[in-house]
Amino acid sequence: MFSRAFLLPFARAAQRIMGRGEGDALPAHGFLTMGSLSDIYSRLPDSIDDLPPPPNSDAVVEADYRARHWVSPAQGPLKPGSDEHKRAIAQMFRDTFNPYKPSVIDWPKLDPETLHRVTSLPIWDIAVQTEGKARLRMAAYARLVQDPDIKDAISRNAWEENRHKEVLSKLVAAYNITMAPEPPYIEPKDVEWAYLVTGFSECVDSFFAFGLFELAKRSEFFPAELIDTFEPVMQEECRHILLFANWLAWYRAVMPWYRRPYFEAKVWAVWAFLGYERLSLAKSVDDKGEVHTQDNNFTVTGAKDIANVQLSLPEFMDLCLAEDDRRFSGYDQRLLRPTTAPAIARVIRDVGRGWEFVSGLIKANRRS
Image (spheres, rainbow, N blue to C red):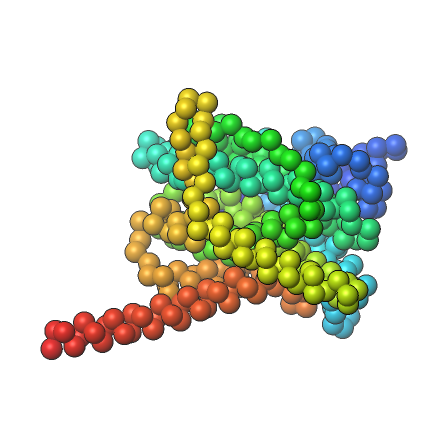
């Protein structure tokens, strides 16, 4: 069960924040007239702190359900490139919006041992900076998009990335985590490249984060209250990569044929860049002169840091695959899912099992 402070009623409340009164109401696609990128990632909805708390526990349960379940009313297939598919993407993202407020999250009090576990994780600088970059890159891309449905969805995604940054910033403040100063967030020169890097990176990181999150929950390595606090954020990441996967399919379908080879080459280059990035450690210096080493690949390698149970690599891949399926299960099956990270996980799992089998035979042969 989620913390009541973390979730808000949505149906009628969401309608109120989308139209605060005459003159203040946003248009149906409320981002078309926005100029600066900060307008895009900070404007939806600007009145969220005025919403009342959930009236009862049933409203909290309903909020969770609506964020996780959605089926398009359209009949027949949702073919990428079709108007039906495009409208379904945007409607899914609007209808599953969860209006929780970072400002009222009741961060649980941690005992010294648990607090040390949280503060010593090598991720906080990168986590905050990644969300800062993501909101800017998505807002920059949304500003370029001409289609109103896609523009609306990606603009909302930028706003939610900004909310994730607020959540992380408040966690850092609540637990006095030492951080290096944030670098300036600069508008990307190649907006499409930056959006692709962010989108594909989220697809990989979210897939493995689903497994890590469930592992932390099962092991009780962190208090249940802290796990519950981040649960809506994890499901929101699922929505984000669902949007990206379907945007990518739509974009490819409507792209002129002569642009396709260049675009696919760019996609391959993005994957090469992400592979290189995952092999490196990022270092930053805080205002006390202390060096912070941050793990770019923590979502893949971090199982030992967030759980007190032993799990083999194939077992962890199975957990990630199961959690990926579970989190996507409530959304319309006609919408596409990200496929690259699950495919990589299956290869790693199968190779790992093969290695375990061969190693077992070698050990048995030596004993005999």
